Image (cartoon, rainbow, N blue to C red; front, side, top):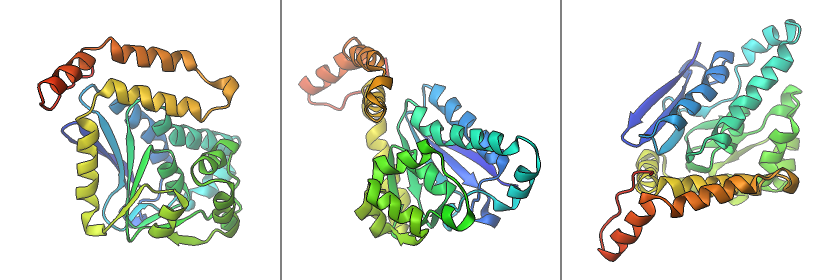
Length: 260
């Protein structure tokens, strides 16, 4: 029925969407479990970076498990509950204080595209295939869901992929600005590992402050919590890591940040 797997590698936690028989399609149970997994890793002081990936090399996430849609449609109130679960899942990486990286190989469609869009950085293999098939299924996206794509792709590209429901490859995803980097499929894991190591070696408080500022910048002006941004920025200057960073620079050595 599919599951969410977690693999820890030092300061990097890999969250794997595992449903290989269905190209890692997300079941109801997977949608429900995923936000709790991210929240748990966010609370873990040993974790500095979270990577989302599909189990195996055929797919990131092929979308929602459509075979479960009939059950959702049949039960009173089930559709609203299902939509709330999707919103929670799509917001999990956004609300996480730590960097969340999408490692995309193979198929990334529908709900998989939404999960990737919620990440801070997306690195794709050159064999990745993308699609937003909502218009082929009669599925309606929420305002927040569409807005996330507009923020990343712009209005014209968002209209293109939603209206046409066409497939597009990794190079076009790069051109649109959906992915940050495209690498050869056999180099994907090494490229993501190297990038995450760079992040993990940096000051966690600085990264958390930057992520919160980026998040607030994407909100409507009246909804922005600028006090939280200022508080996190001030915490950086009051931290041991700030003193360590300056000392390491003067001593010409790599800093050893502790997130304190």
